[in-house]
Length: 219
Image (cartoon, rainbow, N blue to C red; front, side, top):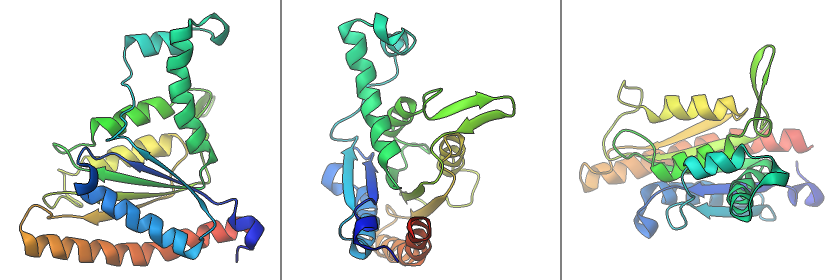
């Protein structure tokens, strides 16, 4: 078990990516996951980044130019742009547990989340290339992904979110991932209630494994 000093070192990072604000199903599920984690570990720290309310800038020509300019040669504007990405990377590096709230938009992830991924994927910082191929540098973290879908896509060819997230997060070393699904949310009140009940059951089942992972590493 975690003693008081160990528990204070547990850092949770919650990333909300919905554009719906308080009406977001995926944020509601992410909040529930975090609440369960903090119920077990009330002294754990929590950082919340709401990409819907505060979108991160996209990776455009100016951003690429800033990233490829040596730090000591960057203009003030370039340095400020890189610093925005640096803050996201630092939050992720400091986290022991990452909770992502991910709605499905047109069969994919929201652009807000894609911009976050583009910001945190940096060669030599969160991944590197070796003689054996790419190596993720963010290993050892637990990731929970709360997926909210209007229809039902789990384990079908139309689910493009899960394969993509497994690939890109795994590339960074984040390969210990639990997915929580709330599906059929747009298929009527009864289907919505069933979707939430099923998602709550998944959370109850998976959190036991997730918290024990952190306890084993901290003990």
